[in-house]
Length: 238
Image (cartoon, rainbow, N blue to C red; front, side, top):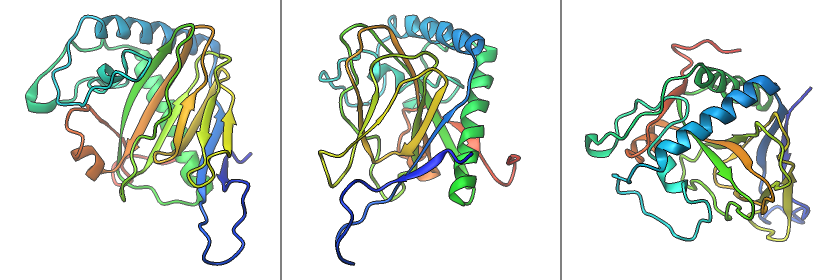
């Protein structure tokens, strides 16, 4: 079964000079209830740490995002929180837990499957992972993660279903929306430059989000603790 697909939008170019966007996406079902419950419990325990801390980095803070922990997660990595922060400052660390490796392995395996299906070569990349826990009436506002010449991939995993789906807006056709249901065990990968948002939730909504970045992007974000996701010279493939 092939889990990857190309999103072109509904407006097919009429000539060779018209703008043509081919955005590769990946959607798969990969998980089980026991691991998901462990992951949810771990994310909630990490969020209690965020509540007690103050930001120490130079990350620009926004008051427009309805999810209050968005900025705080930029200084923590859910799968490996030992990275050095900007200017050497360190916050309280998330406790080590076996669920971290399970989550790391899940993301890495699906990332490698995506590369294989797209016939893309492996390259050395790093990853930053965080959790979004939305309550009744909250949502994630429309945004994209990066949009430079080194932009790579982003993604998310849903350990529990919710009614607030993941929405992607086509870059040249604003009314063209790709909707992916936020169902338990679903993992999605997409180009980091694609604009996306979540609908308003009427329940507690859990999503595990991540950025996969090149070395150049990693060095350009020194306040984020990254973990090595793949290195074809030192790590095994599929």
